[in-house]
Image (tube, rainbow, N blue to C red; front, side, top):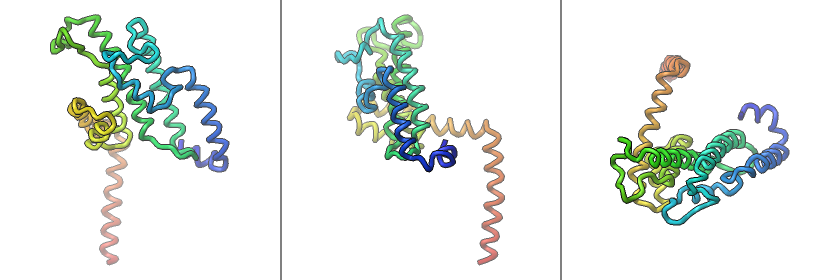
Length: 220
């Protein structure tokens, strides 16, 4: 995308920014989670249903599959828009959009798991759930999804725990946040192992680096 932007759009920064703004407004308005501000959307997705918080029937059981579909569409569209708009001639960042993408995906997974728990309450997966209290809290899934997306896109791990704690102020979420973050370096390592192109490029890089170091030492 950056190569295309430098090659064809570098001379038209205003046209690019206006076109992106118009297309973003047209595409995002029909979706209830895309038409509002990203920070407001994350605040809504982080909330739990037990406290009486509800946004456009987000906690309504009859609208559960509709919410899953809306969150899935919001995740896909926001991911594509972040990829397209990042690097344009507008002062913007990747920090909040990455968290918004993760929060939408996490809330979608949380609602789906909550539906499974209510459909199969006696399943072995939910043996640790207390019968009188809530077992699945979709807001926690949204929180963890935002932290995982932020860590994966920004390539940070431990500092994400501090950042998410400063945003929410919830001490109870520190331990669940630390669980998925160590898995991200393992996933990168797995991609490296299973991708022969990366292994060959890194292997070809090492002889050139050693040769340049030898030449530099001989010159000195």
